[in-house]
Length: 202
Image 1 (cartoon, rainbow, N blue to C red):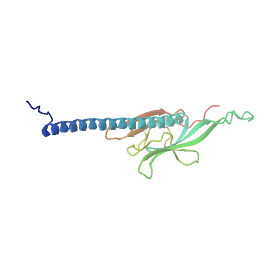
Image 2 (cartoon, rainbow, N blue to C red; image 1 turned 180 degrees about the horizontal axis):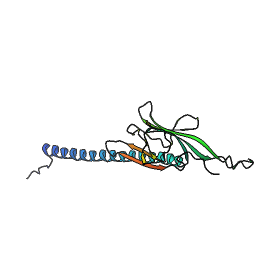
Image 3 (cartoon, rainbow, N blue to C red; image 1 turned 180 degrees about the vertical axis):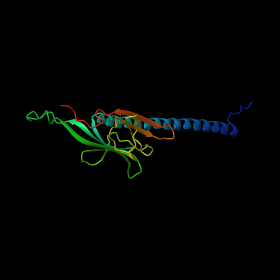
């Protein structure tokens, strides 16, 4: 009578299978972690681009109705802007004369208490408030504003240490996030409609 031998994995075979499973699990985990990091890095970059574009559009829209530049430095811009007063004042006998008004607009780039660069806006005599868009970054280049001055010999880069911002018809706004990986730079050039302080014709 023959005895049937029971078949089973040896200890060595079991250890080899366990080692292979651990290696495969580690590879899958590493791939998953890298995928998640790439996703969040891409999402963060997209959010930064959207916030920077929003700020550029707001600044550009207001600069296109500027009348007089008051101050221009790499991290500060102040100008007077034309705007339409309330057109619903139908009972105002001089509403056509009072329609065009001027107000002061200022932008500045500064560090907050947590060492983040932020973009702030001031209208009239009100306090500086963070500009809509919420851009807040430690890698933002604070040198945002640049102007070109018109002279008899042509256009030259404006130097705030040598003269005032009169006769500056062109301003460049640069929002550069100087990251080690995937740096972001958005540039907008704006021609001022009334570069030398002339008043509009009603």
